[in-house]
Image 1 (spheres, one colour):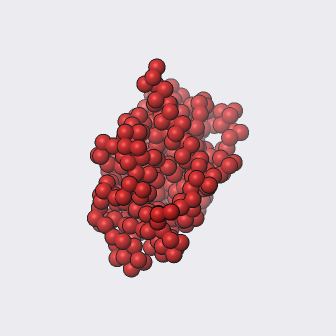
Image 2 (cartoon, helix red, strand yellow):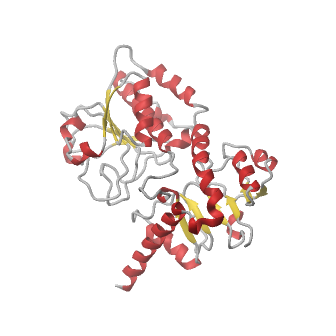
Image 3 (cartoon, helix red, strand yellow):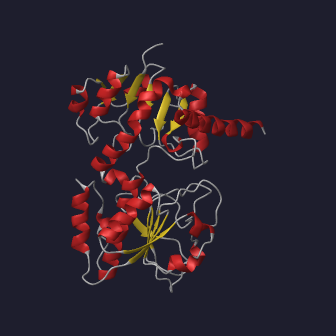
Length: 361
């Protein structure tokens, strides 16, 4: 059996500073007999020299395109639009298996090149629970932005987050900024949907830390939806993972001038999916302007839908996530016998089959 090569690529997205693999983890992989190649990056939260010191082979950014055919390419966010065909096995968050916008085009690249996609979102145990996610820090950061936006609204100040976002050096620095914006004697109420999941837990933690009264909902509450209760909170944080058709949490028709709700943070952020429970916007918001006006019937609600929230806390997010990923990166050598990787591969093949069936019909 040839030696497995795991290739950590530089991220195509300019604002992405996180990494799914830390230098200490590369040492363990190398000790386990895996060849680790790391592309140089001028934005990754970890210095290139630390990977070199750990014994990794260093490569230039984008060199994965010419990597050996059997190399496994590891990343986080979307691939660049080229090359037209993809011959490698890629591991990253592709957002394609729920038939989101562009899914056929992306998977067509793999079909043409003979490659495969192991989407991190589909790394699941037999009970369906995901084994690796950035959820906690996504919820934490999404709730933080919503809280700062609400404070600015309440004080009649311009939106400070819409002055543009840059990564925070630490969660402590973020907490200090929120505290500086607080209004004495005034605190909002917040509803967190998906409160018991990873993202919801992070959202609840930071909100309660800053004195917000939090209501937490799970599957039971969303199956018997009380929209008046949603609209009766100041802030809504959506952390629900939705994989099938359910009633919309809110549509533009539900939001009127009489609503108390003023800020929504859609941490789950899946506007291109048919299953999007908050069809109030058309595309994710950006770091330059994270808060936009939601589509409503007559009311005014600010909506935040940043799709890479943990990148705003890259150090904490990378440490947690890389720790979750490492055991499964070790098992890549025998991935056909690892149920987690088998689940990923099955999701890829099912979705590719859907493309083939459409073409045949």
